[in-house]
Length: 277
Image 1 (tube, rainbow, N blue to C red):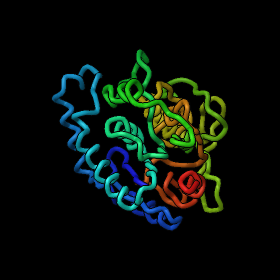
Image 2: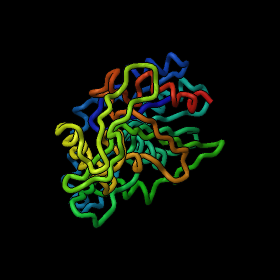
Image 3: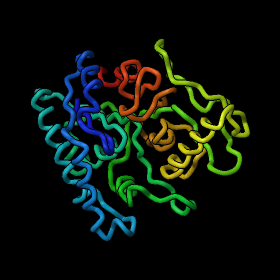
Image 4: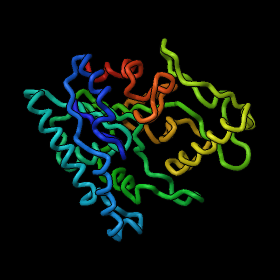
């Protein structure tokens, strides 16, 4: 199994997940990426396509695709002729799709994405700026559509950790703005919010609105559920097996027993069967 990092994450952030997967008998190779490596993306600033919002993955992200390919080649040696499973966290999910498109997918039988913003933000929504500068538009137009077949399976997992809220005005939020993960361990705090978006304290209300502004940049809406970074609706793909997990936070950075992320042991238990089947 190969694991690809999200934007800004490094190899060490996934060490505990790597150990957890190995405990299930899943040999794992994590792409070798440091936080400093992500500064290479600044090369896109000199590309006119960046400023026009039509940026392409190559050559700006060639360095990352090379790291993926190195991990895949190492994994092939371990697999001894068996097919490979790819796991992409956050941006690593859509970058894995770019890799499969550019380098081939014959050896891949599973792409499992964790909190990946697959869909480009809608155009023409006031206040929304495409943070990828066109990269997700390219992925949607040029990369293979998701499938779920015996030969190749796409499994897209989204977290429902916190519901966002609009910055101004009433928000159509549910009774609970945060939901706990479904396990026997201590789980995420629950913040009660009434139907008009007025929480029981100022801090939770501000947090929901702050998170909502991030969601809006990704999917065009603020008052939706997500993992604190990526909205649920953006993490799913037509044609894939789409799964939503309650109480799951986006990142390994800042996660703990009270705020489990996709790679926490109790959460891995809910999706590991896709790797074992």
